[in-house]
Length: 449
Ligand code: PFF
Image (tube, rainbow, N blue to C red; front, side):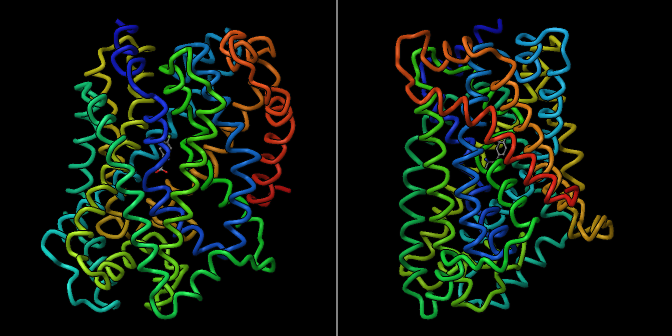
């Protein structure tokens, strides 16, 4: 039964493409610009790139290694590799993170559906920057629409995970994502030729070292984890479906490069426009939604472009949400021994309830604030900046110190059939560099150091 499920998803078809589909999503196009805008611009980008190279790639490769060598969900993988030891708690923490991420991520995905709808109606046309801002705030502060779109998106995610048509979806994304890429480049060209765009490029690329704070560095780390889909076992789960002939090192490198490129290109589209239209870069979670419609307005064919863009963005979000739901479903179905269908229903129901609160964070549930954050903000901050880095810390420690060098080597060299010359570097990174970097950034960022 299990083998059948795994085969049907994985082997005949590029799991690597699916991993890229998981990584590339709203994290790159919505979250990266808004977090960068709040955290000093260029200096954030610089720290982000350093942390992705030093920490992101090692964690991703560690997840692939654990997943493919055990063929299990994150919890089951740790149980298998370290029986009777508490490592499985890392897997459980990842599953908790999956619930929380899905609950707010699918809310933002719902916003993209509203924007697709507005694009179709030509609803952005002729609106000033202030009107576009009001339009977004009014929509998001409403009671029903944000919840409705969230539920529609969750339903689509659940339906795909349950019915096993994801193979088809993933096949289309392989064709569609290059279009998203091209479209972002078109947006880049439009944005950087706007009058006043240079300020935006400066903001994005020129690091201002006086803006480094402990929190900036923690946010960069959290964003790296979030964007790469690492730290909670998503890529352990996907790794468990990767073909034994695939080169894991190449896979991790390529997924990371593609993901980082898309984020930077999204930044190049957003910030010149932010400055050209006089929007506040630290605007927060609404930044991209308040900026993009203005870029489309300034483009020939903007109507068509905006429709295609929001459609592709929704699909990019969908390939990410299915990967998050898959973590929970793989866990429920393998460990609780329930059917895939029941597992999907159970998980989606729980996420659905949590997400109604997240979607209402600016509306009916807007009064609730903890430390200046609404419910959505708490889920966003806690998962990206706490749960994922803590998970990633234990994942690299496990691979570096507990999995056994022989086993790691066998996995990365495909049982000796390829060379994996990078192995010593990788071991050094997972043993020392990555855990130390995570621990320092994390404790410093939370004021524990
Ligand atoms: N990496 C996804 C994005 O950037 O949109 C979001 C995500 C997917 C985070 C899967 C975590 C995860 F496990």
